Image 1 (cartoon, rainbow, N blue to C red):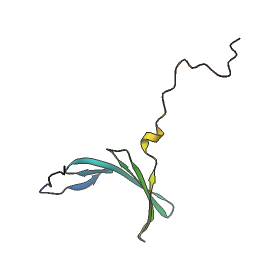
Image 2: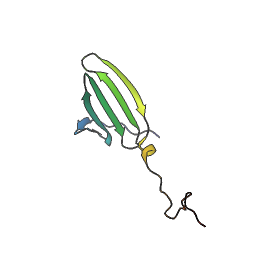
Image 3: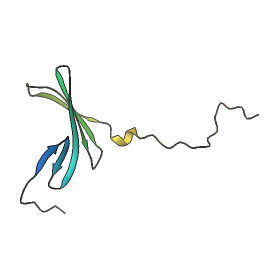
Image 4: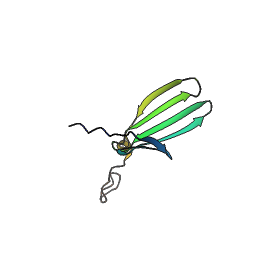
Length: 89
């Protein structure tokens, strides 16, 4: 089912957060590394991370996908796991 179109479109970036008429959508951060500009964009609803490396003023840029934020989560480890190097004799 499609969403009803709104009468007004609102798309604004405030302090790195992309805000539309439907709410906050993503967070972006740009920083310079030497002559290059690096931009990271995180979609807040899915956690998808994209990056862009560009040469400012030239229009040249390379986009790429980075691993999801879920890939960086550390799994819970068992509290009472027996050490395989422990001599139980």
